[in-house]
Every structure is written in structure tokens, then in C-alpha cells.
Image (cartoon, rainbow over all chains, first blue to last red; front, side):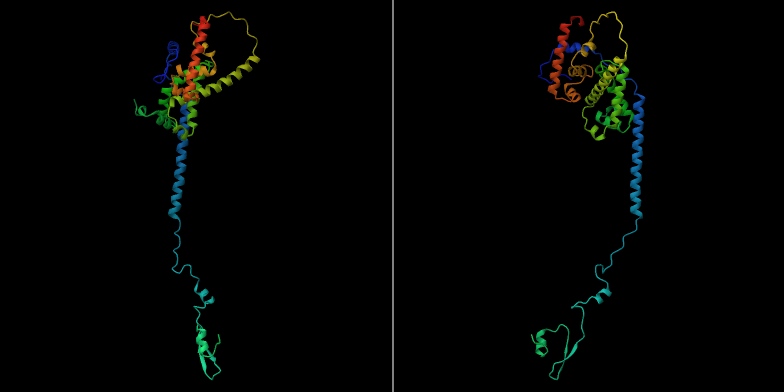
Length: 128
Length: 184
């Protein structure tokens, strides 16, 4: 309560007179009704807040439990539908039937799709 | 002593903030007597004990509206309450001065009163003659029984400033006692 050790006390006689001039305070009166009412309101507000929080949490849990399951992904997910494959031409996937060409040498040559220009040149059908 | 009586005051403060009446009663019984006496002195005894009692009650009610995070930072409950009472007393003194000024303007002129002999030692009157900054330091030190560290918290200044004000206040009181010998 007093100064720290080493500090010089100021006018100790006057300080003692001041200490004795003001006697210890009277015992505490009963806690006032206004303060008790404020405490009661505080308790009521906290209970209401807890009830609201509990209701929100229960609602969220119920929503998670009752929500329909999400659909499982199909094995060919990401692939275009088969009808689209047929409609979309692709050099690799479309197989052309062999074409019968007359080489002009009296020989009919069967040419398939994908045949290289060299092989065609060998048959006399293509000049690079 | 009940179980709550052994709890530190910080825990009692937080329990009171939740609406715990037992914790509030403990804090009230511990601090209200000194705070009421301090408030009465800071108010220059205007309004008497009832005014001081109402002021301390307001301070306790205001604790319930203080954010819990702010209450959790309080390390010295006595100093914090003393500061709250000090601030409330200053506000009430300003309001009271305004009311008194308006009342004086409307009141009739006072009649002659016979002179009254001053009491042997009128400490409250002597304190009222001090500078407000010196007066509050003397009141908080000798009525609220705050240490210098607690005084620094209550007044919102550094310990050195508070100690300097206290020293100057004592010197002023000493000069008043020496000059006005009839006060002794």
C-alpha cells in the first residue's frame, strides 16, 4: 500500500493524520434491488441466446441428415455420348471402306484409307 | 467462507457478468463500502450517502453492460472500480454544478445567517479547497485506500505523476493548516 522500498516518505505525520481523519467505511448495505434486477435480466438474455444458438445448430444438423444424397458419377463421365461420337467425324476412328480405282494400266487397285503417298505412288495412283 | 469466496476477483467479475448473483454479492460486500465513502468525498458530500450509494450502484450495473473481453483484461478490480466511481463522480459533479447554477438564478436572495463557529478539524471542507487533481488523489489514497500503483490505474496517469500530485497535495494541505490555524 505504501511507497516502494527506498522511496522517501512524504510528511508521514500529515499522512497519519489523514489516515485517521477518515475512519473505515461502514459495512456494506444490502445489494440494491436495481442491481439484482439487472443481474436477473442478464441471466434471462444469456438463456435466450443459448436457446437460439441451440436451435440453429439443431436445424443445421437436421438439414445435413435429411438432405438427399448427391448422385454417383457415371463411369464414362466426361465422355461425349455415343450418338455424338457417330456424328463427329474423326480421322482415326472413322474407317472408310476400300475404294476401287482404275490405275489406267488395266488394273483395278483397292485403296484403303490411311494408305501412305509412297505406296500410292508405287501403284501409279499418286505423284508426290 | 463459501467456495466463491476463494475465487480470484477476476473470476468473480466474469461470473457476475454472466448474471451470477452470488458473485455479485461478494464483490458488492467487498468493495461497496469503500467506494460509497470515496464517491461521497468526491461529490463533496453533496446529496449525502444516498447519492453516493446510487452512483456506486450505477457503476456495478454498468459492469454488466461492459464487453466481456474488456472485463477479462482487468487485473486489479479495486482500482478499476475506483476509476469507474471517480469518472462517474466527476460527471455527477458537473451535472450538479449546472443544476445548482440554475437553482441559484431562480432562488430568492438569502437572509442574514448568524456566524457558525468552524469545527475543530473540518477535513472535508479542507479537502474541498484543494485543486481537483490533488483532491482526488488524497481521497483515493486515504478513503478508497488505494496503493500508488492502484492510484495510477484509477487516475489514468503514470505512477510518477500520481506520486508527484500526492506530494503536492500534502504540501498544499500543510500550507492550509499552517495559514488557517483555526482549522487545527
